[in-house]
Amino acid sequence: MKKTQLFPALNVVRKPPPNYEEMHVLKKDFIHFTELIPPVYLIEIENAFVSPFGIVYKNGLVVKESVYSMFKPTSFYLSFYKKLLLNKIIKVKGDCTVAHNSYFQNYYHWLLEAVPRLFLIKDKAPELTLILNANSPGFVKQYISLFDFKEIIYIEDDKLVKADKIIFPTYTSRGLAMYEPITQNMVQWLLAKNNIQQNSNPTKNIFITRKNAKYRRLLNEDEVVAYLSSKGFEIVTLENLTVKEQMQLFADSKCVIGTQGAGMANMIYSTHGQLLITIIHEEHPDDAYYNQTNINNTACYFFQCKGAGNFDFKNNDDISVDINKFTEVCEQYIFNS
Image 1: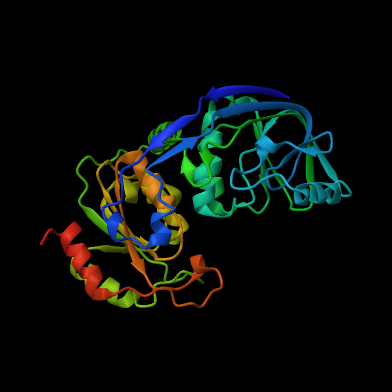
Image 2: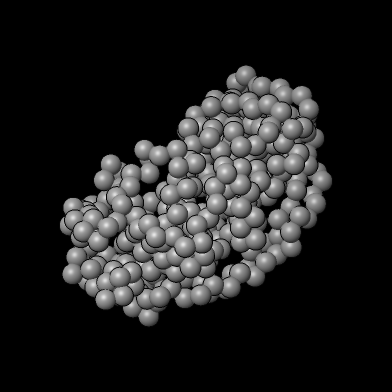
């Protein structure tokens, strides 16, 4: 295995959220004003196997550099590999690459974990065969169309690829924290590929609805929508938009409000100095949006809510907004009244 450092470790420094002092203790403990992001490497391995979920194997062992940074190599990966060895193996000649992980069907994880790795090898793309899961959703294919890979091979969940050579960058994140310069450069490249310019003086205010979601819903969304609509907010269902339309929407928006959801990853396309108000369970420790808004100097206000208690995992709880407090926050931070 050849391992070449592309970027050294990076110490990320972040500003506190505007309402940090008011935040629930469980959330405050999860917010980090500084964080060390590991170095990023380019890995090259000959005669390796690749699973449908992006794990690379060599000599019967898991290549730990291919495992998503929130997880550790475990016996699960090996048992899965041994099971797949009993099925048909797809042999691929030449140089291959892989970027996705087991969360590839989630927009947030695809955009902030897989796409940065593709970005780092974009100059090699015409010489590489990209390995993807056959169940990749439409947004994955829309992003892939921006790269010039020699070939794309889609593999089913029960198949393994044996590659003459696999080349891939390690993850550019540590959990939900990003290697910010890489993400910033990636954003500018993606916008340019779509002929989108960030608006230096955005005026659009948008609310992202999760009305069609199965969990993490806003139970009194009608109240919130009525108030925001009266203030000129546009109500948006992201799943109805193409990737390019989502990029353009966030690049043109001054303020974005929404509950925790994958589509909010599009905040990376926002202009410097914008405002994100994320409506979130007060006890769920999640710093994803806070981390990503740091790359473009966007303020992230955590509007904390009580959960409905309808899921064992609090991250999935439906929530309700205190509409009086919500209007006060909006008047103070958006409308300055």
